Amino acid sequence: MSEHENIVFQDVSKFYGEVLGINHVDLTVRPGITGLVGPNGSGKSTLMNLMTGLLRPSRGQLSILGMTPDDPEALFRRLGYCTQYDAFPKGATGYSFINNFLRIHGYSADQAYHLAYQALDKVNLVDAAARKVRGYSKGMRQRVKLAQSIAHNPDVMILDEPLNGLDPLARSEVIDLFKELAEMGRHVIISSHVLHELDIISDTVVM
Image 1 (cartoon, rainbow, N blue to C red):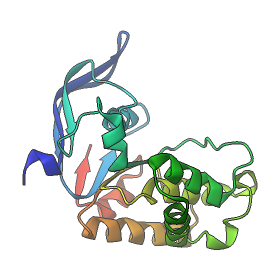
Image 2 (image 1 turned 60 degrees about the vertical axis):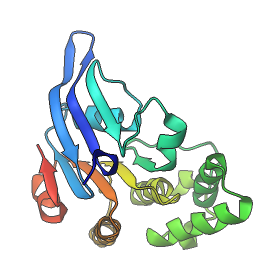
Image 3 (image 1 turned 30 degrees about the vertical axis):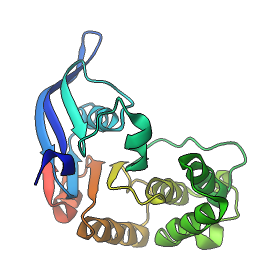
Image 4 (image 1 turned 90 degrees about the vertical axis):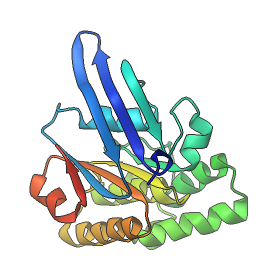
C-alpha cells in the first residue's frame, strides 16, 4: 500500500513555546479503526489537530493520503473532523448545522439536503432534525457533530472523544457505524482515555 493511501508522520514534533506536545513521532496510519489512547495531556488532541491542519508541526513532515495540510481545500474534501468541544452556530437546527457545511463544501441544495438527512439517519437523529441544537441533550449534540463530520463521505474521519456523553444503546450504534466505515476502507481515527473500549473496537491502537 502506497503512502498516498495512508497518513504518515515522519519525525514530527510539536512545541507550545517550551512545552512539548509530541516529540519525534514516526507513525503510519492505515485504513481501519485506529485508536489513540492516553491520559489527558498525553498528546492525543495535538496529534489529531496536526492531521486536520489546525496545528502545524514544529519539526518533521506529515502527509494525509498524499496531501499536506498546506492544501486545506483539497484536504477537507477528504477529511471529516469531530471535535470533543461543542461549537454550534446560534439558532442552528440539527439539519441546518450539517446542511450549511455541505453547501460550503460546494454541494448543490439538493445534494446537501440528501446528504444531510443521510448523515442524520446514520446517527438516528432524523426525528430531531428540525429542533434547535441548543435544546439537544449532550448525547444528541455528540451525535450531530459526528453526523456533520461524515456527511460528505470523507476517506479520513478524525474523531476526538466521540463516545463521550452517549448512553449504552447510542454507544453501541455509533461503534457499529465506525466498524461499517472501516469495512469500507476508510480511516477512522478515534481518541479516548478508556483503554478497554478502544482495545475492543480498534484494528490498531497507538499509545
